[in-house]
Image 1 (cartoon, rainbow, N blue to C red):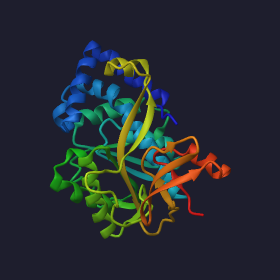
Image 2 (image 1 turned 90 degrees about the vertical axis):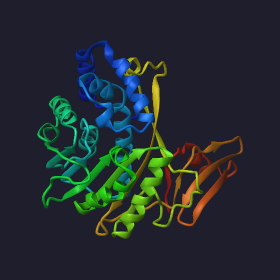
Image 3 (image 1 turned 45 degrees about the vertical axis):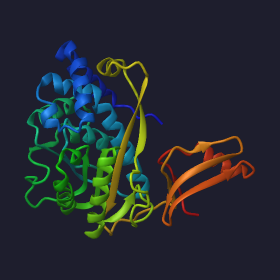
Length: 327
């Protein structure tokens, strides 16, 4: 299933792109190089043209990943409806747009970022939204590792593509600090790269040790069963608008964004854990569907034969990242 930007956000981004002129494509190319080199945004995004390029080239993919993960949170946490939200490392507010699309009962939204330029753009984009929660969101200029939040807590704390910018020795401490601010659910989304996955697994271990309960993607709270050198990540497909293609110098009408994520919750929240999760693209063959799975017992490769008609039809529809419910 494709994930599209809200129409108001798409229009606002394209207006800023026009405002910044033809340099956007060049700046977008520079940003792609910086992203692959794991350069932090404070170094890669330094002026108005950089911001416009980021919005055009990266915001659609980031939004798609966040939307997909929030959908998983809703599926795994029946009845969870957060009222207060912290978007930590908010950038231009990408995750906040996805949050207000996903949940209906939000009364307070706080965007935290160290980049005042990003927060300014977040406010300009939010002004185009029909959501009063988004338009009236609080903005805080501060460091992710030491947020200026006083003693405040939130029902949902979300950080997307933000921990990746921290040094290795700062990631776990920052995540634990966010967990302390969380009264309900903590969502972490990172690029689907080996380095970010390894850091996410260290974060997972620390959070479980601090009393967090696993929600997703893992169907268990055991150590990750993947062998060294492998990593767990997922993919979401998003359609490219004409402006998106121009910014990236792309010809394809779609883009596949790879990401890793972690959802944990306080023990008081009911969780609907799956029996297993599909962790690679299923192999659909003539007489069977082969499903690479992560289960509570470890890795598994389940073959569903065509002769089992009902199960085969279900298996053919499964995609990378989907779950198999416990029977």
